[in-house]
Amino acid sequence: MAADGRDGRKATVDPRLLELLACPLTKGPLTWDEERSELISRVAKLAYPVRDGIPIMLPSEARTISADDMLTPPPRLSGPS
Image (tube, rainbow, N blue to C red):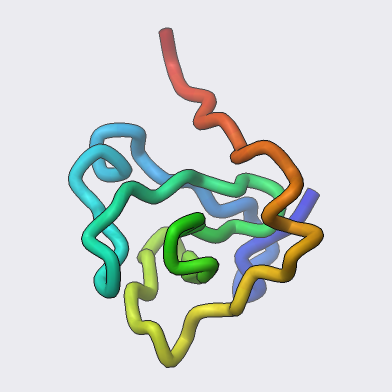
């Protein structure tokens, strides 16, 4: 399991926060990639990192998503029922 890279713990995003966040470039929805601890904007083809539970919503910090990543179905957010 991937960690957020700082303290070795797995990063998480509150489902309510995910509903409020949008891609700063497209203003479109984001999906949570738990494995990589990233917020994904499929429209912008960018992955924004989450460090210490804080989404880094700067395009300069985002990773460009490859064509292979785009073929993979979007990750589903899992949360409490």
